Length: 198
Length: 198
DNA sequence: GTCTATACGAGGATAGAC
DNA sequence: GTCTATCCTCGTATAGAC
View (tube, each protein chain N blue to C red):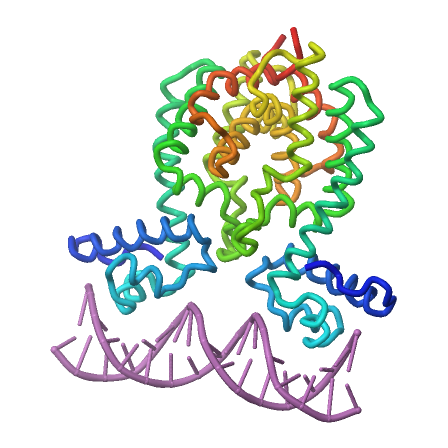
């Protein structure tokens, strides 16, 4: 669940280390192929410490997931707020996602490719998480402003961002031969053509 | 692996039953949350029979995966062959996928949402599987024919089909309040606008 | 708070009868 | 080919010392 004692610097450092390691291993091998033993060894801490801070494996995963989602949300929000046009908001978001997928592929892999509901039963599906709802919201506001043609909100959102998301999948699967960022401009352009008012 | 004795009708029937059950349970609970016990009980067969036909759990999953991919490929190919224009090919494919996701959601869930490489280590990533390569091929031919503007092939493919794929994800996650097929026309239109030559 | 040692159960896989 | 019974490993989680 949540870190227990934020005032203890040593404990917090240990938690940080465990979370980092967990992200690495979960992304590489998957949740179920990663044992507490693995995390313990890779992080250089003891079983007891892990269970003390995270209660059990599921809570550890949830803690990691929540941390990452909160971070992405916190970083995405100002990008959107500082722009006024729908197009520029969309562009900013895809810029951000591509950069994140490039600089922290493990993080993006965990977020995008993980079937969280397999081990986090009461987690909302990823598509209903705040970042995805924010994307939909951007498009709805674009429709209100007349920048985007009249579409079902979900269709508009997936048309604008679906290509970008799949490009990140391809990147993470190693299917692309050039760096992801080289596809950025075309990807944004395609998404926008799909939804822009004519 | 592959079914062992195709000549035995009883054995084939059992295999079919096991595969059906496995698809159901893997889609619902995930591979790792489904034990051989679960499959055995739900399919009404014995442990021995399962291991006799599929060798082990991993091979069972691989057998299932291969079966489904071959089927999709076999059903997609004629749809493409009978059309000549790129647009109509794309439309046919998305029509087909949406219908499949509607009629056989478990199947689509297994194909789209499963992280196959977590339990099928030497399987190619889903994006490199034949159906996905076929989609890319359609767009490349569309470019050659001048129907599609000049784009990176992967960008074109994800722009055309990425929205549709995400709509299926939303559908499978229960995020849509209308039947998937009601979003079909808009989805195809958006994808095409993204890539069509102007 | 952190460690080691250990209990405990689950589930994959096998043996051997029919 | 199919069944039941059983083995055995592995991994989660706990107990209890420091």
